Amino acid sequence: MISENELKGLIEKVIAEMGANQNSSSTSNQQSNGNNNQNTVSNLPDDQLKDITAVSMQDYFDMDTCVNKEQYLKYKAKTPARLGIGRAGLRMKTEPLLRYRADHAVAMDAVFSDVSQEFLDEMGLKTYQTMCDDKDIFITRPDLGRKFSEETLAEMKKDCENNPTVQVYVSDGLSSTAIEANIRDTLPAIINGLKGYGVKVGTPFFVKYGRVAAEDSVAANLNAEVTCVLIGERPGLATGESMSAYMIYKGYPGAPEAKRTVVSNIHKNGTPAAEAGAHIADVIKKILDAKASGVDLKL
Image 1 (cartoon, one colour):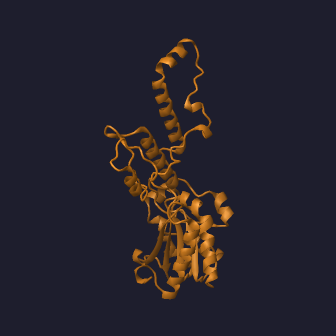
Image 2: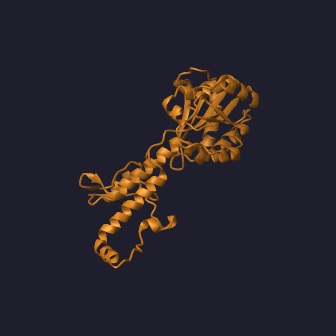
Image 3: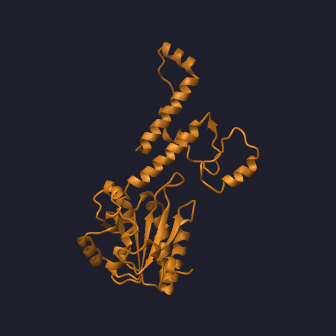
C-alpha cells in the first residue's frame, strides 16, 4: 500500500531524475565548480507542482497517431476508461503511469481512511460500530460488518426514535471519502424530500465499519417500515467518491439482496449529491406506496 505522500515523493523523484538526465552536462559542470544550488522539483512549493490529475481521463489524449481523433474523442468522452494514453514501446508513457499510481493511491486512501470525527460532529451524527474492532477486521471479515453487539443495539434503540416510517442512516462502507464528499448535500435532500411528502423520518446516525446488510439489523431493531443506508462504494481508478443508497421495505436479518432497491454512482461525475437525494426521497415514497422493494417493486 502506498500513501498519497509517498506517491507525491515518488513523482517528484522521477521528474527530478528526468530533468537531471536532460541536463547532465551542465549539472556536471556545476558540481565540478562546487555549485550545489540546483533548483530541483523537490525544492518547489506544492502550488508550483503540476497536478497530473487535474485533467479528467475523458479529456486526456496522448496518442502519437490517430486516424480520426475528433470521432475518437467523442467516444472517449463517454467513459473514464484509460483510452488514448499512448505507449512507449510495450509500456505506458511516464505521465499516464504516474496518473495510474495517483488514482490508485486515491482508491487506497478511500478504503483505509476513516470518516473524520469533525465531519460527523458537523453533521450531528452519533456513531454506532459494528462488530469489527478495526479496519483490517472490517476488510477481512465482511460478516462482522453486518452485525452489532447486543449492547450497541440496545444503545441505538435507546438513543433513536423507534417505529419510524423511514430510517435513514450513513455508513462508511468501502469509501470514507465518498461519505465526506456527498453526505452534506444528499442527507438533507432526502430528509426534506420525505418531510415534503409528510413521511415520518427517524433519527439519522452513522455506522462505522458497516456493510450494506447491517441495515437489516437496524430495521429490525428500530422497527422501521423502510430503511435506507447511504454507504461508500468500493472505489476504482475512475473515482474514490462514489456512494450508493440501499433501501429495503421491512428489512430483517438474513433478508436476500433481491429485496433491496439501489441508487448508485452518487458523485460529482455521476449523479450529483443533491439531485440524488431528491431522487432517493421519491423512490422511498414509491416503496411506501407499493409496500415493496427490490425485485418486488414495480417502478
